[in-house]
Image (cartoon, rainbow, N blue to C red; front, side, top):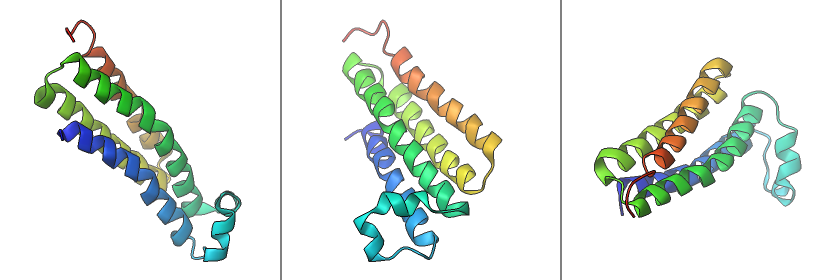
Length: 132
């Protein structure tokens, strides 16, 4: 498996880390809350609420990134030089995004979100004109 494919797996797992922070960081989560976890998560405040929001955004980031990696791979883009580097940079932006969200640093959070979006677009961009 390539580094980029491992990065897809990491991005898929990031929302689980966020929801763990949201649920258990609140100090209020009990197994009975797991019968309707969405209601529980919507009632959170502060850091646990921001962790929940980071979880939702992390889920939203998965499809575009995974598609970009797969399409670049299918297009025959140089693996190590291009796809792997862009994928690792994307994972880095997602980690920073989560950290900045938890720390309530909205401007930095938005900045790394845009950089991450640019990296996903770059994965598609490097595939243009590459013979499959």
